[in-house]
Amino acid sequence: DALIRRTKPEQRRRIGAGRRRAALAIRTLLMSALIFALAGIQLVLPVDRLATVFVVDLSDSVGEAGREDALAFLRQTLDVMPEGDQAGIVAFGKDALVERLPEEVRNIDGLRSAPVKGATDIGEALRLASALFPDAAQKRIVLISDGNDTTGRGQREAALAAARGIQVETKVIGLADRD
Image (cartoon, rainbow, N blue to C red; front, side):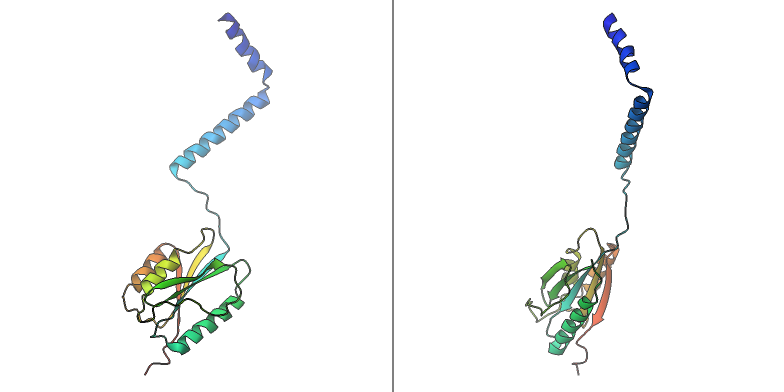
């Protein structure tokens, strides 16, 4: 027991004052980090990348001219998209289908997805588009449609997307063909 008491002060003398201060500083830093983590404090860094999901209406109400306008708009927008930004595409009618996941894409040949064209469910398309975004990017949905929502859920889903920090914009197509 006496031997143990003698070794502790000797060990303290072997560790220099600078090392003791460094150990205390490290312990204090680790304890602070643990307290901040338990308190839920997060470090949020600004994001300069933008991920856009284009939600394209391919239903019968848009018509062939509307589908061609949508494809022309997509080509033009992708052509001027800044470096590092990502674009995805959701094609929809009665159902919504992922045409392309968000990626750095600069061109598109055409839309290959074939949703059921007899109805227009904007709500389902917006919900699917909201789920496609990568975490480390600003989020934007561009709805390309005539606005004829046969289910009536589009406005509610747009409000939910906006509440999640997703910017929702619209591009009107297909109205010129109507009587």
